Amino acid sequence: MRVYLTAARLSMRRYLAYRSSAVAGVFTNTVFGCIRAFVLIALWKQKPEINGWDLSDAVTYAFATQALIAPMGIFLSSTDLGPRIRTGDVAVDLYRPVDFQAWWFSLDVGRALGAGVLRSLPPVLFGLLLFPVSLPLIPLRWIEFAVCCVIGFIVSFALRYAASLIAFWTMDERGVTSVLVTAAMFCSGMIIPLTIMPGLLGTVVTHTPWAAIVQMPISVLLGTQSGGFGYAVVFGCLWALGLLVFGRVLTEAARYKVVVQGG
Amino acid sequence: MAELSSHAADERPLPGPVAYLLLVRMWSKSASQYRVSLMLTSFAQLLTTSLDLIAIVVIYSQVQTIADFTLPETLYLYGTTRLAFGLSDLFASGVENLATTIRLGNFDLVLIRPVSSLAQVLADQFTPKRFGKLFAPIITLGWAVNTLPVQWTVLKILVCIDTVVSGFFLYCALWVLTGCISFIAVDAQEVSNSFTYGSEFATEYPLQIFGRPLGLALTFVLPVAFVTWQPSLYVLGHADPFGLPGFLRFASPFAAAALSAIAALAWRACVRRYRSTGS
Image (cartoon, rainbow over all chains, first blue to last red; front, side):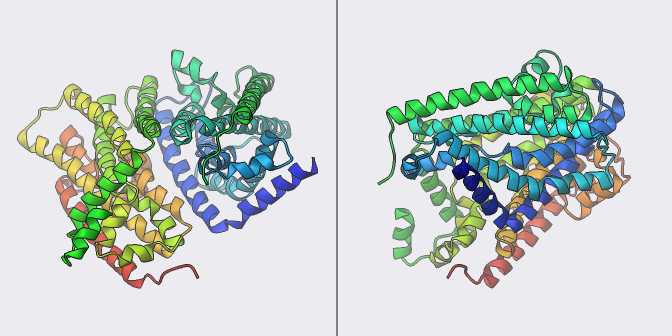
């Protein structure tokens, strides 16, 4: 267990070392938070309530999604594992006397914590100052939110880990992962909230694993998750479990007939 | 690089545009080596632009108008902006690799070659996948032009074409200017995204939604209002909600020329004061 904790700690320290790039990231997250907030404000001005959300829910959502982008790794097409398989460096990783999936999970936990520390708070603070962002003052909501974030992160990791492993078979994971990033952007609710998607589209997107990554934690925080906290936890855990098992099966298959590139 | 070196042997400097095209051909060949990946990434680009389109349609499934713009009108904005941006992305987004090139010290190599540094940077890692970004805007623009209740006069058609052309030059100038950021702060890649992808996203919607102060800043400071907003007000027959004078509807070519000139000067200044990196 200690080896995983150390890996996570060192991975976090590595992330924290790149502070100026985090400042650049915060700037961009804030700019995009503002643009998305303006779009949602224009929509809510026409229709003051959509599926139980009022204007301040929508604006809070716009900035909260920006806070979650970096820790949840929405734009990360894979874990660092993908490129290492492509270049052949993975041979070293396979020699390590640790569980392969748990090792990569520890590294990603460190990255997510570092990103959360450096990049999550500023966009929301900016929104609080200049936009009608309203965060609940109920401690229980924040605990529920934290639990949903942890589950969402595990789902996100499990998805990206499985996607990286594809490189063992295709030699280049970038094609598959770029399609996955696009799907993640839309289905997580980063472009527009899943709550305003109509009919069949709405039903489909609220059941993909990406729904557990961004939309559900924020809906739980706002107190508008249909089915409540319990539903969000069960939904997220089922996807997390399924995807982790899928990742393990792929890992075993890759180990059985592994092709390492490079030389 | 074979073509480039044979030209260099003639001791005739290769004109920038020719060098650019040769480099684009070289990078395309390189990108085509991983065929399945290329096809999938092209598909991803197609998907990315279509999802923004779906987002707009979803928003209009809730309301009839946004800031007095109907769905076909907003899709006209989306089509012109995205087409101009897609073309500029095709042509100039190699700039995105500049920060890495500088950090690794490879910009020294760029300067040594007897070819325009800008041509090399713009063509850097060109990939045919970027054509994927053009499909959704072309189809959407065609549909919007067909559906809009606009009386198409010769002047309106010219302004419509110019919207895309001027928009292309404005975005290209923005790409080059964001490249200049890499010279000043190598870590600031993500700041560049705010200006390029941020302006693209912002100009898909009626500028009015950003309110007067920001709307004016996006007209006179960072002149992305000229990408599609100002000329489209004329084409769609909308009054300017900010009450700006009418001649601005036709000012896009001048805005594009001015920003391109600034970008060219900034690029020269940056290359001149470049002092290499590494140890």
